[in-house]
Length: 206
Image 1 (cartoon, helix red, strand yellow):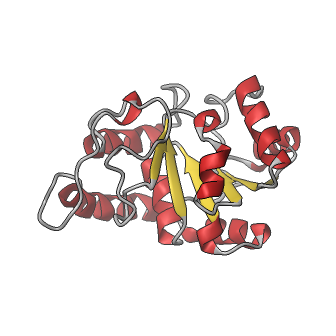
Image 2 (cartoon, helix red, strand yellow; image 1 turned 135 degrees about the vertical axis):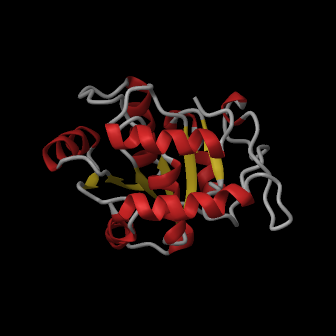
């Protein structure tokens, strides 16, 4: 309930920022039409609900671009970011992306609001640390992940498919944020409520 209240308050504030008001910010257009994350969208890092970058999928986030931005640690969401809703088998593209990230020296922590058993199982497949039941967008899980990464805020990026959990939580902790397109339309009931507000904020959101 406290999360829903927080989202409602921030949505009211964010609506004025993302519609081209004098207070700053442009509404993001054509978010999911860009092929990767070249930085040509209207993403605005100064807004509480403005991700630093967009990407169609986690697997399309270029490791080289993260390195160029000084990012060495990643806090990654699970459902609809790494794999589809309630799926248990990771796709080859994401397995390969995580393996290449390890090879390049990135450290990764999976941060999920999902239950412990499921999160630990997927984390074991990827050979990464994990924090289940994170209560995103509250900052506690993000700060725990930061401590596990043992890096400075400017060296960490949050990657996830939800504006009001992954991006908002990352912003509350001063972290670089990348918003991905959800892998599929299926979601938890509470997430469907958040999706409605996302479509208001991001007009081209599915």
